Image 1 (cartoon, rainbow, N blue to C red):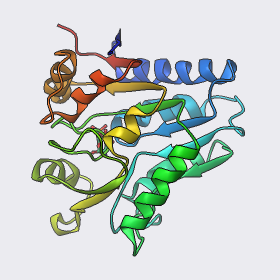
Image 2 (tube, helix red, strand yellow):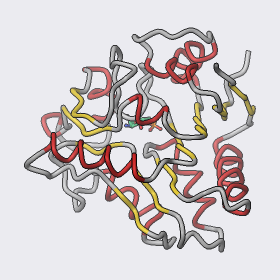
Image 3 (cartoon, protein in one colour):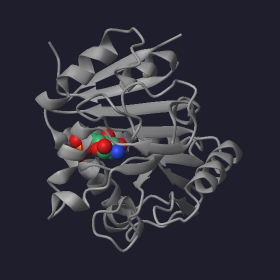
Length: 233
Ligand code: GLP
């Protein structure tokens, strides 16, 4: 059964403040032991609000959704680099877990990560969304029962990401990503959808029907999803 809660915000700053206040709330109720984190520009205001806090996260483990295959933690476009810059260099956690994009054994890396997730059930998963409706790097037509896996990125995602790379050839074509099922296993989900580019994905989610061409619509299978958005009407 799906329960979508929607919180309308005016701007990205307010989106970040609201998301962080929900994180802080769970922490204060001792209901935050494992949190799933996302990357992307949508998350920048969330991490800004987080960095400004003095709350104690030393008993909380973090798990990131995805990583480009082939990029190491030192690469300035890797998600590991992003997370260290935005959060891990500023806030102390019990442990932060990230998929290793430089692994020589990607299948094994995915299996091990899924096992870690099973051992540390997520209390909360933060999500952004791709313009084509992907969540993490689960592209259109990814199966609902998918677990952590190697994903081939679509042309549109590669194009959307190319703005961050100097040369088009260096834009990664594959990623390691938590699957749809791994995401749906989280107790609570907060998805942030800001700006007109995300309107189609927003509408697919709000249609309250599952459409495998729009992975974001799978969230309708989850009992506790909060949408933070400026896209009403
Ligand atoms: C990438 C990430 C997603 C993220 C998306 C949106 O594809 N894998 O997790 O939601 O980018 O990025 P942005 O917030 O920059 O629009």
